[in-house]
Amino acid sequence: MPNFDTAMAKVKKYELILEDEMTLEVIGISSAFADYRLAWELNQCFNINLVKNNDVFEVNPIKSKDTLSFRYFSFLDEEFLTRIYLIKNRQDQGLFQADRPMIDFFLVLRENFSFQKEVLIQQLRKINGIVAVFDFPENEFELISYLTS
Image (cartoon, rainbow, N blue to C red; front, side, top):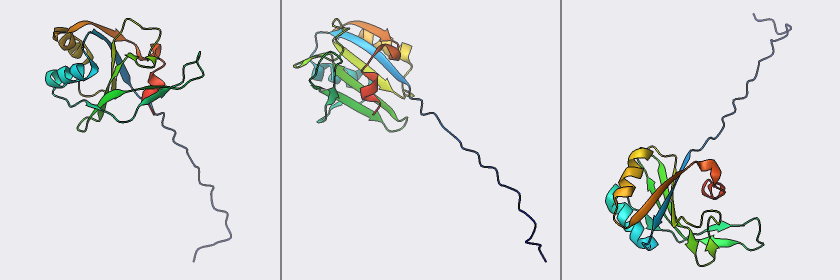
């Protein structure tokens, strides 16, 4: 018969904390295309389906009291869970990234397991109508915080 009078040993508890580390790749594109035309070109070239969203990114610039809204195109690769965003930098309300006025579009890949970035950039440079492609480190952009929510 068990003896209940003896003290049971304390159970140690361990807390597992997982850092939610998200990877984002930011590519700048200079092109005279309209946003819908560039989305179509990217869809054809990469076999994706960028569609215009009804939602907008709302940005609160540091130097402004107003909230700016920006339209965008997006695609979710359900197999690899990669999200792709195409955002026109210059829209009616102003620049999405005011410190990069020479960039016409930002192509942002969130959790990219679908494309090799170097190959993607090479293919972008081959599209007629794209003048220049720029590879940026994600930490250079304020826009990243808007895409992670």
